Length: 206
Image (tube, helix red, strand yellow):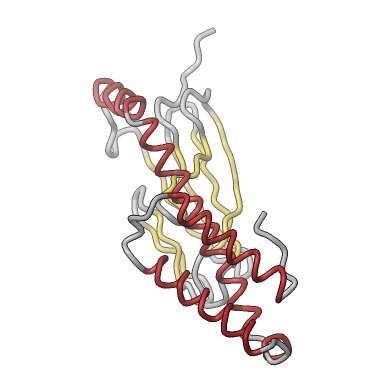
Protein backbone atom coordinates (compact mmCIF):
# COMPACT_ATOMS: atom_id res chain seq x y z
CA UNK A 1 0.00 0.00 0.00
CA UNK A 2 1.35 3.39 -0.99
CA UNK A 3 1.38 6.05 1.71
CA UNK A 4 1.90 9.79 1.50
CA UNK A 5 5.16 11.02 2.95
CA UNK A 6 6.59 14.42 3.88
CA UNK A 7 8.91 15.56 1.04
CA UNK A 8 10.99 17.95 3.17
CA UNK A 9 12.11 17.81 6.79
CA UNK A 10 10.18 20.00 9.23
CA UNK A 11 11.69 21.60 12.30
CA UNK A 12 12.57 24.79 14.06
CA UNK A 13 15.57 27.10 14.03
CA UNK A 14 17.49 27.05 17.31
CA UNK A 15 20.43 29.14 18.48
CA UNK A 16 23.15 29.47 15.88
CA UNK A 17 20.66 29.04 13.00
CA UNK A 18 20.77 25.26 13.34
CA UNK A 19 17.61 23.48 12.23
CA UNK A 20 16.40 21.00 14.83
CA UNK A 21 14.31 18.48 12.92
CA UNK A 22 11.06 17.29 14.49
CA UNK A 23 9.70 15.45 11.45
CA UNK A 24 12.32 13.96 9.08
CA UNK A 25 11.89 13.90 5.30
CA UNK A 26 10.03 10.84 3.94
CA UNK A 27 8.09 10.32 7.19
CA UNK A 28 4.68 8.74 6.51
CA UNK A 29 1.65 10.84 7.39
CA UNK A 30 -0.33 11.32 9.55
CA UNK A 31 2.40 12.02 12.11
CA UNK A 32 2.79 13.98 15.34
CA UNK A 33 5.81 14.85 17.46
CA UNK A 34 6.23 17.04 20.54
CA UNK A 35 9.52 18.28 21.95
CA UNK A 36 10.48 20.61 24.80
CA UNK A 37 12.88 23.49 24.17
CA UNK A 38 14.19 26.20 26.47
CA UNK A 39 14.79 29.92 26.05
CA UNK A 40 18.38 30.81 25.15
CA UNK A 41 18.58 34.32 26.64
CA UNK A 42 17.96 35.82 30.06
CA UNK A 43 14.66 37.74 30.23
CA UNK A 44 13.58 36.50 26.80
CA UNK A 45 10.02 37.75 26.40
CA UNK A 46 8.75 35.85 23.37
CA UNK A 47 9.17 32.84 21.11
CA UNK A 48 8.69 33.48 17.38
CA UNK A 49 7.40 30.95 14.86
CA UNK A 50 8.31 31.85 11.26
CA UNK A 51 6.17 29.28 9.46
CA UNK A 52 3.30 31.67 9.54
CA UNK A 53 4.04 34.12 12.29
CA UNK A 54 2.78 33.93 15.79
CA UNK A 55 4.54 35.33 18.81
CA UNK A 56 4.18 33.51 22.12
CA UNK A 57 4.72 35.76 25.12
CA UNK A 58 6.74 34.21 27.94
CA UNK A 59 7.47 35.57 31.42
CA UNK A 60 10.86 37.25 31.81
CA UNK A 61 13.21 34.84 33.55
CA UNK A 62 16.76 33.48 33.36
CA UNK A 63 17.52 31.46 30.21
CA UNK A 64 16.33 27.86 30.29
CA UNK A 65 12.58 28.54 30.51
CA UNK A 66 10.85 25.47 28.98
CA UNK A 67 8.36 25.64 26.14
CA UNK A 68 6.82 22.70 24.33
CA UNK A 69 6.63 22.65 20.52
CA UNK A 70 4.30 20.26 18.72
CA UNK A 71 4.24 19.50 14.98
CA UNK A 72 1.17 17.57 13.78
CA UNK A 73 0.44 16.77 10.15
CA UNK A 74 -2.71 14.94 9.02
CA UNK A 75 -3.56 12.74 6.02
CA UNK A 76 -4.47 15.80 3.95
CA UNK A 77 -1.04 17.30 4.49
CA UNK A 78 -2.34 20.02 6.78
CA UNK A 79 0.26 21.01 9.34
CA UNK A 80 -0.55 22.35 12.79
CA UNK A 81 2.26 23.85 14.85
CA UNK A 82 1.68 24.77 18.48
CA UNK A 83 3.91 26.17 21.20
CA UNK A 84 3.14 26.21 24.93
CA UNK A 85 5.13 27.93 27.66
CA UNK A 86 5.04 25.42 30.50
CA UNK A 87 5.25 27.68 33.57
CA UNK A 88 2.44 30.09 32.63
CA UNK A 89 0.44 27.83 30.32
CA UNK A 90 0.46 30.44 27.52
CA UNK A 91 -0.17 28.69 24.21
CA UNK A 92 -0.49 29.63 20.55
CA UNK A 93 -0.76 27.65 17.35
CA UNK A 94 -0.97 28.03 13.60
CA UNK A 95 -2.30 25.82 10.82
CA UNK A 96 -0.49 25.57 7.49
CA UNK A 97 -2.60 24.13 4.66
CA UNK A 98 -1.48 22.76 1.32
CA UNK A 99 -2.61 25.92 -0.41
CA UNK A 100 -0.54 28.29 1.76
CA UNK A 101 2.95 28.61 0.32
CA UNK A 102 2.72 25.17 -1.30
CA UNK A 103 5.86 24.11 -3.15
CA UNK A 104 5.67 22.51 -6.56
CA UNK A 105 7.19 19.08 -7.20
CA UNK A 106 9.94 20.78 -9.20
CA UNK A 107 10.75 23.16 -6.33
CA UNK A 108 10.86 20.30 -3.82
CA UNK A 109 13.26 18.29 -6.04
CA UNK A 110 15.45 21.37 -6.49
CA UNK A 111 15.61 21.97 -2.73
CA UNK A 112 16.47 18.32 -2.05
CA UNK A 113 19.25 18.43 -4.67
CA UNK A 114 20.63 21.67 -3.23
CA UNK A 115 20.63 20.12 0.24
CA UNK A 116 22.65 17.18 -1.08
CA UNK A 117 25.08 19.48 -2.92
CA UNK A 118 25.77 21.54 0.20
CA UNK A 119 25.66 18.65 2.66
CA UNK A 120 29.38 18.84 3.52
CA UNK A 121 29.27 22.61 3.92
CA UNK A 122 26.13 22.35 6.06
CA UNK A 123 27.79 19.76 8.31
CA UNK A 124 30.79 22.06 8.74
CA UNK A 125 28.47 24.93 9.65
CA UNK A 126 26.56 22.69 12.09
CA UNK A 127 29.73 21.63 13.91
CA UNK A 128 30.89 25.23 14.21
CA UNK A 129 27.48 26.38 15.50
CA UNK A 130 27.48 23.55 18.05
CA UNK A 131 30.97 24.56 19.21
CA UNK A 132 29.88 28.19 19.56
CA UNK A 133 26.73 27.21 21.46
CA UNK A 134 28.68 24.91 23.79
CA UNK A 135 31.11 27.71 24.62
CA UNK A 136 28.26 30.18 25.11
CA UNK A 137 26.38 27.81 27.46
CA UNK A 138 29.43 27.03 29.57
CA UNK A 139 30.45 30.70 29.72
CA UNK A 140 26.96 31.57 30.97
CA UNK A 141 27.33 29.06 33.80
CA UNK A 142 30.81 30.31 34.72
CA UNK A 143 29.59 33.90 34.88
CA UNK A 144 26.66 32.77 37.02
CA UNK A 145 29.02 31.09 39.50
CA UNK A 146 31.34 34.11 39.55
CA UNK A 147 28.42 36.39 40.45
CA UNK A 148 27.97 34.38 43.64
CA UNK A 149 30.04 36.33 46.17
CA UNK A 150 30.17 33.27 48.42
CA UNK A 151 32.32 31.67 45.71
CA UNK A 152 34.19 34.54 44.04
CA UNK A 153 35.19 36.17 47.36
CA UNK A 154 37.08 33.02 48.36
CA UNK A 155 39.18 32.90 45.19
CA UNK A 156 42.82 34.01 45.30
CA UNK A 157 43.28 37.28 43.42
CA UNK A 158 45.47 35.64 40.80
CA UNK A 159 42.88 32.94 40.04
CA UNK A 160 40.02 35.44 40.01
CA UNK A 161 41.86 37.72 37.59
CA UNK A 162 42.70 34.78 35.35
CA UNK A 163 39.06 33.66 35.14
CA UNK A 164 37.81 37.22 34.65
CA UNK A 165 40.32 37.78 31.85
CA UNK A 166 39.28 34.53 30.13
CA UNK A 167 35.59 35.44 30.47
CA UNK A 168 36.28 38.75 28.74
CA UNK A 169 38.20 36.94 26.00
CA UNK A 170 35.31 34.50 25.44
CA UNK A 171 32.75 37.32 25.36
CA UNK A 172 34.81 39.22 22.82
CA UNK A 173 34.99 36.14 20.62
CA UNK A 174 31.28 35.33 20.90
CA UNK A 175 30.23 38.94 20.30
CA UNK A 176 32.45 39.22 17.22
CA UNK A 177 31.87 38.11 13.63
CA UNK A 178 32.78 34.48 14.55
CA UNK A 179 34.97 34.02 11.48
CA UNK A 180 37.40 31.85 13.44
CA UNK A 181 37.67 28.16 12.58
CA UNK A 182 35.68 25.64 14.64
CA UNK A 183 38.75 24.42 16.55
CA UNK A 184 39.29 27.92 17.98
CA UNK A 185 35.94 27.78 19.82
CA UNK A 186 36.57 24.17 20.86
CA UNK A 187 40.00 25.07 22.28
CA UNK A 188 38.59 28.12 24.06
CA UNK A 189 35.95 25.93 25.72
CA UNK A 190 38.60 23.44 26.84
CA UNK A 191 40.66 26.26 28.34
CA UNK A 192 37.62 27.69 30.14
CA UNK A 193 36.61 24.23 31.39
CA UNK A 194 40.11 23.55 32.66
CA UNK A 195 40.42 26.71 34.75
CA UNK A 196 36.80 26.51 35.96
CA UNK A 197 37.23 22.88 36.99
CA UNK A 198 40.44 23.57 38.93
CA UNK A 199 39.38 26.83 40.64
CA UNK A 200 35.55 26.67 40.81
CA UNK A 201 35.04 22.92 40.94
CA UNK A 202 32.77 23.06 37.89
CA UNK A 203 32.21 20.00 35.72
CA UNK A 204 33.12 19.92 32.05
CA UNK A 205 30.45 20.60 29.44
CA UNK A 206 28.42 17.51 28.57
